[in-house]
Every structure is written in structure tokens, then in C-alpha cells.
Length: 240
Image 1 (cartoon, one colour):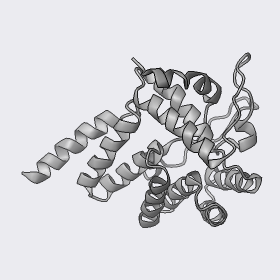
Image 2 (spheres, rainbow, N blue to C red; image 1 turned 60 degrees about the vertical axis):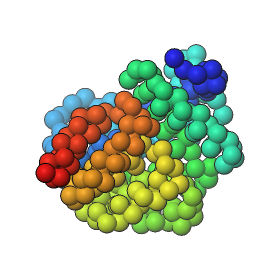
Image 3 (cartoon, rainbow, N blue to C red; image 1 turned 45 degrees about the vertical axis):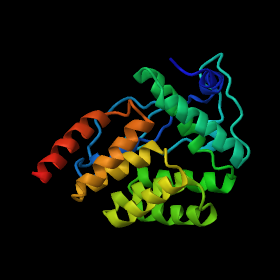
Image 4 (cartoon, helix red, strand yellow; image 1 turned 135 degrees about the vertical axis):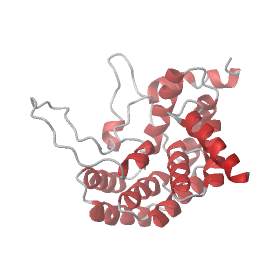
């Protein structure tokens, strides 16, 4: 049962729960496995997007959700942003079902994408479009500019970490993910990406620790429990 203080967040949650277009850091595990696929001919559709879609712009994130559902104003100050995220992270950690956790997580991602700067939002859009088109060098240059302009904006570091990973630069990807978590220790996508990379480079004890953190933040993150169980067996095996 949710604590009384968390029940007050429900109205905010309903307003914030908008879908986020960019694939999460579960994409880290697929970058080196998936070869480009040739699409089969199909009828064009206005909503047709590449498999790796850029995130919605701040303008799109502010649009109303389904008919009858109004969106609450996004945080206008760092203090408001911190409070909104803290409330939603608390609600996420105590979610009692996968569906409720997903709704809360979508609300959190909506706040992540809100930089508060039109210039930063535009550069982020262009960077993610470049990632979707596999123009990774361009994406990194654009994201370099974003982190220079907004060094305290966690999502810019998070997106650049993914671009570095796609560019086979694991060291820089790890550095950026750690920067994200220094700014926002509950950033579940950064936790997932960090755990996956640490596991990939053989730092399984570190990967296990991060995976436990991830499950504390987001108890229904896809495949997290399975990955935790596998890492536990692998780490215990190393200790023998």
C-alpha cells in the first residue's frame, strides 16, 4: 500500500505519463548484435519512424495526452524539478505492478527531456536524429555542444553515453554514464547502461552492484531480475 504522502503524487503522475520515443538503454545490449535490417515494402504512414527513434522534443513533450487527459505544467525551476522527480521516484520504487511502474517511469522520462532551454532542446533533437540515421560523429559533436551549454542537464550526458557506445568508445560511454548518475543517482536508464557495460568488460562485481541499485529504483525494469540472478551466479562462480 502506498504511503499517504505518495498518494498526493497521483494527480501529477497522470498528467506526466506521456510515452517517450527513444529506446531505453536496453538498446546497449543490442548495438553490437544487430546488423542493419532491410525493411520490407509497406504502406507509408504518418507515424512511421526508424527503429531507433529520436526523443520527443520539449514541444512534443508538452502536448496533451489521450483525449480528456490534461498535462500538468513541467517544472520551471531546479527546485521544482527536484521535488517532482523525488516524488515520482518514490512512487516508482513502491509500484505494485509493472503497468503502474511503467506509467510512473514515463512521467519521469518526460521531466528528463525538459531542459528548460529552446536551444538545448533543438540541439538534442538534431543529435538524436543523427543517431537514428547512424551519423554518430555528428551526434557526438552536437551533444558535446549541449553538455558545454548545460553541464548540469543529465539527459545530455545520458544520450552522449549511448552515442559513444555506438561509436565503440566504451571508456567515454562509462565516463558519461557516471556523470549522469552523479547528477541524478536514480536515473534508471543510466544505471541499466552502466551495469551492461561493466558486465561486458568483465567487471561483474561492479555490474552486480549497479543492477541491485537499478532494482531498488525501478523494481519492474525489463529483464533486471533475470540479469541480477545471472550476475549473482557469475560472481559467486568467480569467488570459488
